[in-house]
Length: 75
Image 1: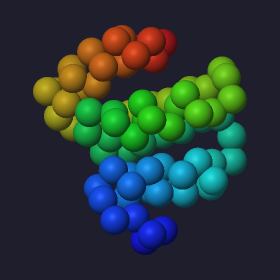
Image 2: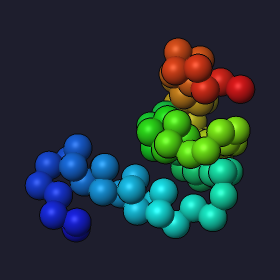
Image 3: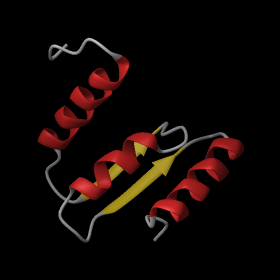
Image 4: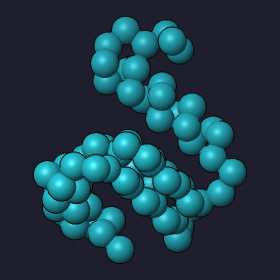
């Protein structure tokens, strides 16, 4: 949808649709995997913003935590 022709374009369209529907500055992503959507969306929100990612995979949680720290989003 949204005229996307590549995976990257489709992800951008999806993230923009999510941003358009957010009522505030807090985001919960249930089934977040490694947190890629949160890491894309959070910096676009007015600060301070809060994001919570939930995954049942300890491996994904560790990868997400490492990425959050690298991106300055760990807090």
